[in-house]
Image (tube, rainbow, N blue to C red):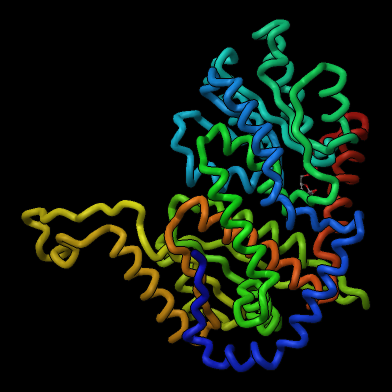
Length: 421
Ligand SMILES: O=P(O)(O)OC[C@H]1O[C@](O)(CO)[C@@H](O)[C@@H]1O
């Protein structure tokens, strides 16, 4: 269950009524693009794709020997699986993410792995991303050197259905490969094999994850009053004059979720609109309670230039009672016999009230609990929110032209003879 709370934004219910026609227009414009095969709206259909899930399940069952799962990928090809695996991995399989190009940690990882018990999953929609290709060169060579002809069983690819270097490698070497549908962009791909394959090895309840996402689809297509994605899209739209949107999650298990949302929001909406205006608000990640002892000072006394979104679980799947400890009555007595989750809830509520009291614009998304169903719902909800905002802000939420220059310059520098920086 996902619940929106706007009690410190008393003007919102009226604003929602007044903006009804605008929101319905935005939805209509978005859904009209669904017919266009070029439209990158395939993420809407991923929760219905049971055939891919079956194929992933079969592959998982056929490879019970995996003890270490190494994901090579960056951006949308890593952030989603990392956010969910770190929350729901109860399988005993150890996960490692090579979503960077720093040699020391890669060497440390290689020295600690047993190649006979390691599965490497290279994930790249384009098959052209330098960081992922560099990691693939390292791990493919390592597998070949250590496993001889058996290396192919230890490498699985997730990439474009037809194009790119990874698809070509899969065909040339007869490697297992899963497809990222053409009409699904990287930052919208967590419910495609990009996420589902590693999460199957993490033993996550994928049916519940996809069922939650289907619930978000249902609400995105529902009448206005029930339409949660249009409500939060309007909250972001009404506060577009505030340059920063903070995404603060009260869950240690979901500590990588803010990074996933930052890519989704910033890479989708940080654009030039049809008139060439620079559009977009900056998503900033935050964690509760950790940031109560860091960024909250700024949120309370710094500029009132933020819309703050808290994501708070309403129930714990299991709680931990705090024991009485003699000698600590003075400082900790008030905690004796309380549940740790009660402390989390009290801190989240205190932060919510303190931010509103400081004059910051703040609302909360309550998750019934940190479960595959509720988190599947939240992810798909945020993808709808972002897609609707693309319509409201007049930008294409599904391309990322601004990232290309860095790639071209990197290539130029590396191709320059004797380059030194
Ligand atoms: O999956 P790929 O094609 O390797 O791309 C990785 C990431 O790089 C980007 O293309 C940006 O450079 C993101 O949109 C994407 O999620």
